[in-house]
Image (cartoon, rainbow, N blue to C red; front, side):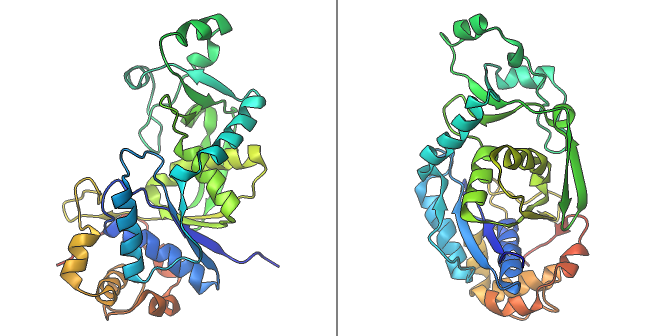
Length: 308
């Protein structure tokens, strides 16, 4: 008998949630609820200067207003440093981590970009430093810490896009698990939190698909189960830009003022994306009966929307 579905939405509140975030939250919620599962909220505020508490609180209020409700208190990443440290130390004890002193400028100047997220593929420069060289550099610079990756192709079967695979050494390179300022990296935190929370279905934007082989590798190292993945198309503005919190594209403040009620907003979004047959106002709970991954699969490319 398969385990009950546990889904989640995990925003990074560096700005007000926008329409693209709303679509991701809605699909994650509808997928879990349509399978009789549970739904969790996680606040990914590891970078606390970029994610002040007022924005974290605003994200939770916006979701509650929409009726996208969660089944237990939200998990807040900035409160979980000790948890992440334990898993970081476990890898360090196995000799899988090493300090990296490269600057961002050096990385971009020397390395080819990763095919998925336009970040440089790390050439392993600091992996070859002698203990003496490391000790000398530590006198003047705090290092980041990277995870050694194998020359191995890791494949993931995505519910929406099908087979996705990367050779970690060639397409990614050794990647950062702790930054030079001491903050733990996204890849570490998300894998630990999903596993310890029992999350077994992950719905998120297509822009994160390229992270999945790295996360699968971490799951294997820590002995975690692999969740089901579904990466969804991104929402685009009419001029072809990806919706961004930085640009305040159709943020929840504007949308709440424009539509007035959560039912009107959700009904419009569901009708625009095909989740519902029309734009009739509906609550999140009412949309559960309309949800099907077959509808989402019709969108192979990004989705352009306007809230006119």
